[in-house]
Image (cartoon, helix red, strand yellow):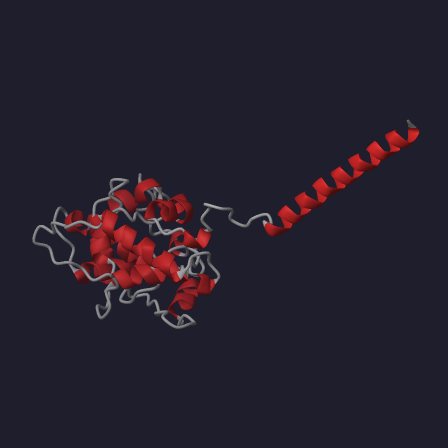
Length: 260
């Protein structure tokens, strides 16, 4: 009986050891984190809804609006911003802001094909024909248009002060702290496209119900830029390092990278 009992215990130990060894072998073939059969790796995800929800929705809002960052679901915005600028912004981000670089070449998580899928998805889902009501389409960057701060001050008092002057109900945009956090391009884009998801009108009606001209927009940006602390302005005027970057002048006449 003793020998029989020992033999059974030995067989059980061998069986248990074999089971453990088999589990270890299986685990070695499929390490944690590796996609299993039927699963898709993060780099293979190409559908726009998933890419947007995973990477953009937190700042730009569900369905591209009502987020803290720039509205993307806006036909006017997508008409004004060049498609290559939108692509570069996603790839490179906006250094010094909460907008990170998303391209793998810049340390981000997205492949070149995924960045392109995002840009195409934004365009295909949210870009639509815009009725400009006879108004000229302003340039995105205002390149070549030198802003006049004195005229910008007058325009601000006429068109913007009620909502954005000191102590105004919407919030001051002449405060030095605020202006230290935004670029000239951010100001220019806000004037052009407004925030339709929050009720802010765009350039087509900001001029007492009439459209602002390209010159008017640059003048407003120049006025606001003059209120920015000198040290911040000096940093913005300096050339940005790296290929593809553009300088940002306080006149509001050049574009700084960014989804703005």
